[in-house]
Length: 289
View 1 (cartoon, helix red, strand yellow):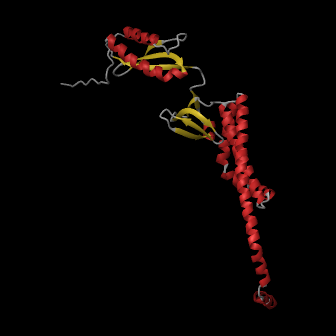
View 2: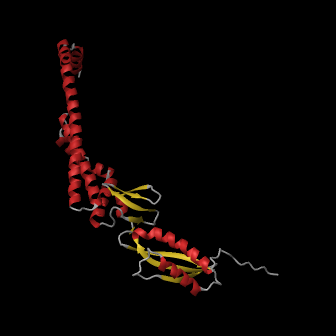
């Protein structure tokens, strides 16, 4: 033990060779210059790589368009190619600074469990995106209602991990693909025609037959109503303050909202002209003497 202490003291007491320091200082400018050149070349390589990635993405998009691929498929593949190529570009630049790609892969493999747990949400979203493209419950420009109807809108983009919806009030909903693939989805746009239902209440002392004739005439006169399908007016409920009549017809998906608003307005005009009142909610109160 004492011998080891003496050796350490001898090493610590030795003076550093000034020649080594001078040699290091002499080589420092050359090393700094080479490192600076590496940085400049890496920057140029990155800029060129970005342009090449853009070119590859453009070629792939054009090829998919010529093949009449679905817009959602094009958006998803574009996101995947972009992410993969940028990762490859970063690895290539890092290898120029002496980073061993094999060592990085081995490190990632050894840490695979921890990484998998950390990105399991992203992997779920990626898998959800793949399922959406394979099963096609909806496509770009479809109007969908998700779950209990809180989230709904027109599909604008199907990306690698998220899908973007545009709501009626011009907001953008960004929903994880994993959530979409595990939710109940109502695709309003999948079929060309859509049923339109409007409920209107009339007074109890009004003539039901006359009211039905008036409302059926409103449906027959509207240009958006499909003539080849049934047009119905029927009593749907005997409510507390009114007899509720339901108007049912069919129209094209693209005409649905305008037809609904127009027919609702025309129903009011037609009932007023026929002298059929639409009652307010009311309650009869009886007082005991």
